Length: 81
Image (cartoon, rainbow, N blue to C red; front, side):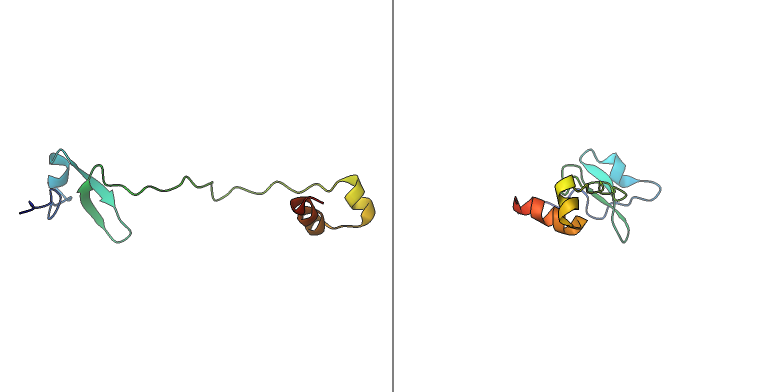
């Protein structure tokens, strides 16, 4: 018979019963705060900062002489032409 979860029903407001249990941690959810096991965490890929701007694309002199705009030059560079 499986035992009851460590964190189930633990209160996180004062007095905080979640912090008193060794294997538990207070987690911030989108709707509310709750108690969770310390090793239970979501593995997410590190994302780049939201305010990161893309470096402006510099056309080569040949591309400028041929009359390509930035989008055309970038596409040709990605295709390896």
